[in-house]
Image (cartoon, rainbow, N blue to C red; front, side):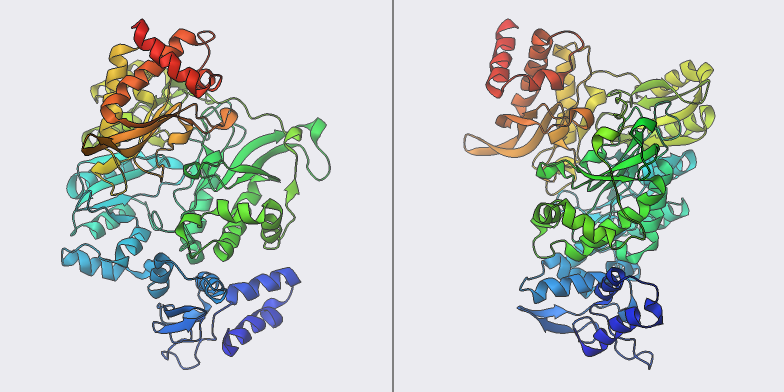
Length: 628
């Protein structure tokens, strides 16, 4: 640390600015200011960086040479994002070498690229080199070689949209994208096939609609999710949409919330009939009730959130309970403190271990929460799970069909959107239904579908007709309504197979050969990133290349028995390296075996799969073929 930086840090905590801070908080402020220099008294002169060099130049630190000093210029020394520079400096000083993405973020602040992106669009050019990564901070993904185009990921807090916003998105998709939108597994939307000339048009159009997607990609906090039935669910313990919106706006308003070691997910579950899959997130808040008989002075009766950390099912781990209960008004400061500790401590040298899970694996919960608590003005409340009433059971098919709301005489309907794709005509039609028969409200879900709320019971029959007229369905059709698929290699360079097309082919084959009376989730994901969360599906398929004679063809590894919430379980591998043309038959065999060998008609597929060993399931599949 340079002398001026050290003086800035000490002055901030020991001078008048530090009055009233505890020693722990002063220590945190010193860490926050680490690497920053006092702004130069003559404005316009170069500002010294955390490494002691002028902004934009290169410096040598530890074993890493030509490391760029932060390049934002201006009064950068006092900028809140210097917390990231300080973390980089500490890891390099300890002998590490920043990965390419960290070097790119250090050389150019991606939040300040608007003019550069506009100039590139005016020239009809796509980004190159590290700018491909940095442009993701604005929600724009250049997805070559899968498509020579941008994909735009939106940012929709809690998945909550108004009808005019959905209509506006349809207009943008028609004018600047491919004429469709994809619902994602973070209750979000993506637009695809955006030309090199049009990213700024799309971003301005979204902002005109009140949708700010800054940080929708890159090393940032992704779309904050909540229970999709927040405020209308008779079963819920607490509304979570207000908390998701508050967290969303906190992120937008704080520059230090960008440029984390890696992406970060946050979810709020209010105990309603449709789960938010919070146990698959880096931070999960699960609503629970502490009853009078289990209450005490430290933990009075009422609704709390169980704090869970470290979920990342693509790395085969669910979020785990920390032993901490959080009041609703404490959620935002607790989440912000958790993120700050991750900013300071997450791995910036190896992308494979740059997620929160790996800090927790290394430190353990006690050490991590101790550092979190030092950043808070209150003490974290410990609470054993057995003092909380069990979470009300989820309805695994509550996101499809008509369901009564907590408001008398009103219902919500969940539409079946196989693999989540909607044309512009369907987007406009859904917006019109919501406006005509509801309150103009649409809720996206993590199951790649959506809900229309506040429908008068007398209008249900009319709404059914209008949904079907759009070529969509409101019924739980066993397989199609449980399909989840990532973009696949039709639009993603990482994917090894065309997952959306394959998912629809599997559904068509199964529906022709098997008559199900219980819902089944089938998840197809294209690569190890597991955007479709194949590990938590009843049946999960992850794409791979498979040898077929002298050729390599698209195929899958198949897992069974995944679950979430009360049935939390990672799917087990059942078949390895199936060619895709084999996959529909295998899925059908599994479902036939389930129907033939379940304990009764109420047994769900996940329970059937998990009471049989892998060899037993394979034998049952063979038996199903012989019986057919």
